[in-house]
Image (cartoon, rainbow, N blue to C red; front, side, top):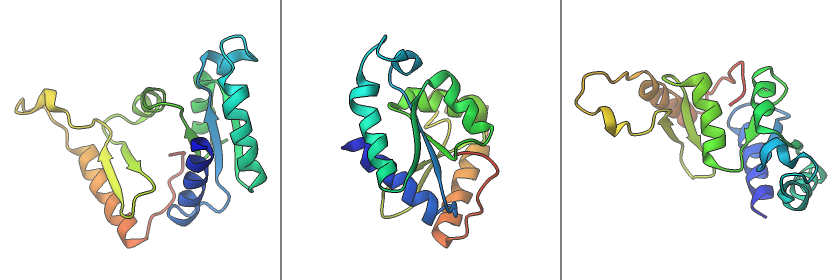
Length: 158
C-alpha cells in the first residue's frame, strides 16, 4: 500500500541522496496517542502496523506508529533520521515549530529536486516589505546541492 511505498521511497532517498547508510524512520500515528491500543481508533493496528512490519521485513529500520506528541522530539534528539506523518498538518506543524524562517520542504520521488521555503507562498505579506528571504535562499542552495550530488547530511533529522 501507500505507507509501504512512501516508507521505501524515503528510505531509498535518504540512502542515495542524503548519504545516510542505515536510515531510521519513525511513523507518526494517525489518531491521538497513536490510538492508545485501540481506544481512539484502529487505523494504527489495522493499517499502519502491518505496513511498518512489511517495511521491516524488507530491511527498512521503521518504528511506529508512535504518538505525534512525542515522536518529533525523539527525532530531534537523534533517535530517528526522518518522521513519516500521516497527513500534512501533523508533519508541517512540528517542522515549522523548529525551523520556521530557515527550513526547507523537500518533495521526494520526482525525477528532479523540488525544494520550497518552509513558509510556502506567503501571499499574505506580498508588497508589505516584511518578507525574509532566508528560507527561500536555503531552498535554492539545497536544490543546487541536490542537483550537484554533494549534499552533506545535517546534524539533525529532516
